[in-house]
Length: 316
Image (cartoon, rainbow, N blue to C red; front, side):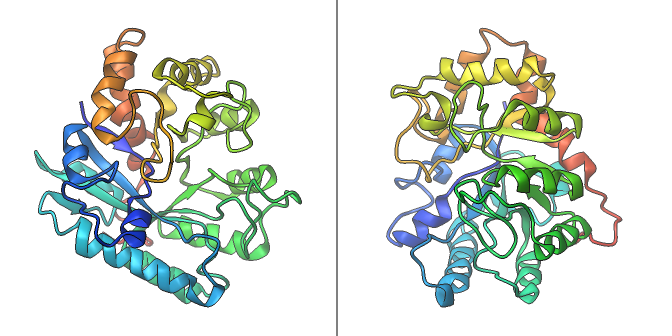
């Protein structure tokens, strides 16, 4: 069964450890593991650690993009998706690779840098990580403010260029501001707060809003976001699926693993090769139709089908 994974941090690891191999190395999302896990589309996040100085942040973004082009795409079967519609044209054995930006910190107020990122093929942008920047407050900022005027301008540009607006990591107020303004919206890697009360997870009213707006919700595999104690299992992840389903969101659920960005794992979900094990576990409780939705179709229907290949902002 084909899989869409809406979030991983392989580029961060490749940047930190240049000796790592993408082909068959230690990465959770190495090509070998993606292939074994039947991953058809993998999002690769660009994230700059907070300790990087302001003057060097954009250079780190550029370096991670270079790793994407020179190390990920060097594998012939890895295909750069410059439009989400390109998913429709992937051949047997090919894996689509999508660039995503996690936090606008490195861009600052320079829209020229943002346009450069569009040109490189960035198809998804989360305005913040956990802190504050020129666009908005993240969920870790106590102030909890929403979008700035500049943040609103960025959302408008993302709408124009048909770039996904990712609400994972946003403050609660910024979440609602983005929901009001965004055309293509997803939560790439967030779970249910009702099932695990961590601030990075989404409250029921947020999940309901995403469902009503016909958005995609990618469940994340970081144990701290799955279960409010140690020892998270795939059955614990199932409780999040059940809860979001009870809100009417069964056709909106997918996965954003956060592989290579997490230091511990749900038991049995240690890397991308384990997606078939998750499928086997979920097949005990869900229909084949629902399973195909979780692993691929829900993302396709909620996100890809909304991309207009003839729109002004399209890069196709």
